[in-house]
Length: 128
Image 1 (cartoon, rainbow, N blue to C red):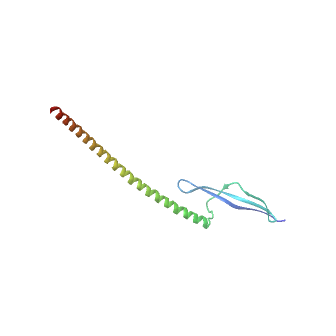
Image 2 (tube, rainbow, N blue to C red):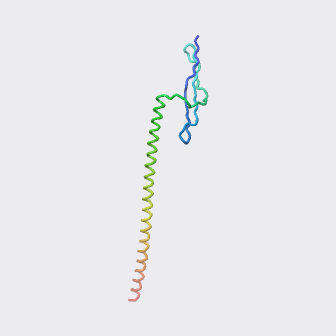
C-alpha cells in the first residue's frame, strides 16, 4: 500500500499600500492525501504569511503585472483627460455666468428705460 501526502500551493494574496508597494502577503496550500491512487483527503489549509523577498514569479504573473500596469496607465491618462475637460467646462461655466450677469444688467436697464418712457407717455396723455 502506497500512501502519498503532498502539499501544493493553492492561492496567493498580495496586499498593496497606498504607495503602490507590497505591504503583506499570505499563501494558502492544498493538502492531498492518497492511498494507492485513491484520494482520501483534499483540503485547503489555513492561510499563512508569505515573505515577498525572493518570491519566484511565473510568466503568467509577469504578464498579468504588465497588463495591470498598462491598464493603470490608461486609467491615469483618462483621469488627466477628464480633469482637462472639467477645467474647460468650468471655464465655460464661468463665462456663461458672466454673460448672464451682463444680460441681466441690460434687461434691468431696459426695464428702467421702459418705465421712464411709460411715465412720460402718461404725463403726455394727462396734459392733452
